Image (cartoon, rainbow, N blue to C red; front, side, top):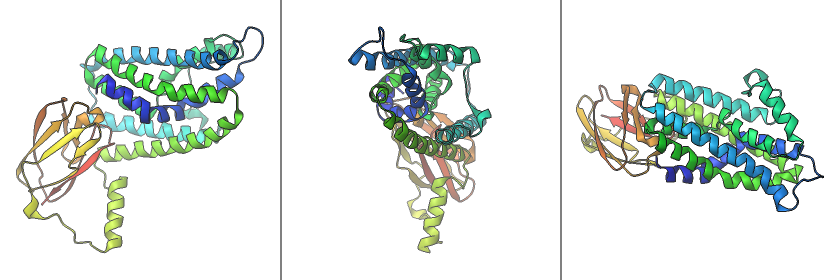
Length: 336
């Protein structure tokens, strides 16, 4: 993934997902700040606290990206570890979403910074200084949203410190406009805070379920959402004998890979034959840059603007899932 692609990701989906997880913390600190004295007036009173939060957030994630890229060449994410991370992230997001409406839900699962840091933030939150929002921006590194986690994996996979720093810098910079708008609006209204809690809760719960489903996809489970929906559709239509046409089988298929997934997302091959799959990678890949066939324990890292040939044998007839490294994009290989 390039820094430009990461910026666009932050500007679109990333802003919403990160806001759902971290926005409530920012609004809480802004609501505690007192008025009067030398408190900046006009637009400065609205902009400066949010700006302090965003500067710290961008800076700390850029440093994190540098570190992840530096260690990237020596850190290997095994399929098992990738699934485990997906499950942990999904459960954390589910609990976070529920806790937005029920703060006492599973308090032992709360991801909190050290007590000394929390006291420091509370002590400064009611003051006119920008210390509290700045510290809070630094602490966002401890509570990443699902999209941030995906970008962190991309940073590791880059194996280059400067490129990885650019990826996380571009992503967090892209999330900044939405945080700025919501932070400014929330400064003067509790109505937005209440409404936002419901919206954020729904979004985070949905993302948690999607992340857990991604873990199922990575294991090749027949119970992931797409497979269940397809089975229900087949049952309702009564077409239980639908089988891929063997005459359409191609043992030299070509799959185009981009940041939007795979095209085509369904191919047919001969079971038992050695199949040569050409993966044509575009300039921007994202998590699609890691190509997996879970049932065969196949994992292939792709390089932008190159074609990679993957050799595989599908031992028995049936459906085989291929997916990206996060379980977000998927497709089906019909072996006949």
